[in-house]
Image 1: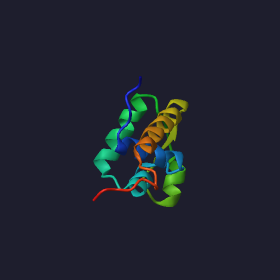
Image 2: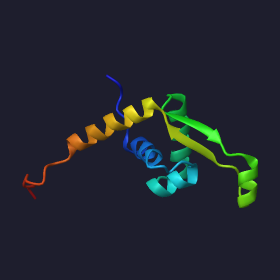
Image 3: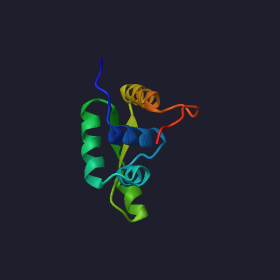
Length: 101
């Protein structure tokens, strides 16, 4: 059985799946700190869950900013995200369960 992904990793994969494709956009979508996002993106790439491509210089220069590195989920990344979200869903309580307090 594959190791389940943690919340931060799942949040990053989900952001990418929702077309939040570059670092600062992923940070904004997840609310996670810069260090967490970039370290996790490196690990996800090594595990084969994301692929990357650098934006061309001309596009970045035309927009007056540094080049962006864009991330996309691989098939393995999609599978890992689906499995992790299913595991998180299994942890939620149905609405009809009365909570004791």
